[in-house]
Image (cartoon, rainbow, N blue to C red; front, side, top):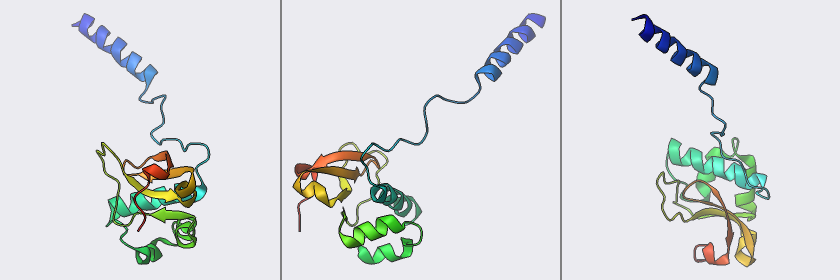
Length: 130
């Protein structure tokens, strides 16, 4: 019995010394070059996905303006585009673009895809223009 307690004490001491922390961050880092407005838009999309309904039109933005002012301003002034009705998908295997920098229409830019992550995109990655 003493041998079992001794082994248990060693295991617990090792666990306590190691702790529960991890060397990796739970929050993914933002790639260099991603605008603050796009970061704000990611937060907006996450909130609308998990806290309600997907954004269906520019009218839906008004209720979020106080919490995501940079995103709303960029979406309203055309700096960013939104694919209305799309949302984050937990198991997106071939994620499509939800929101993107308008400059991607004529070259390279950053986008948020259905996996909730930032992706460097070009014109061919964007949804067809209407």
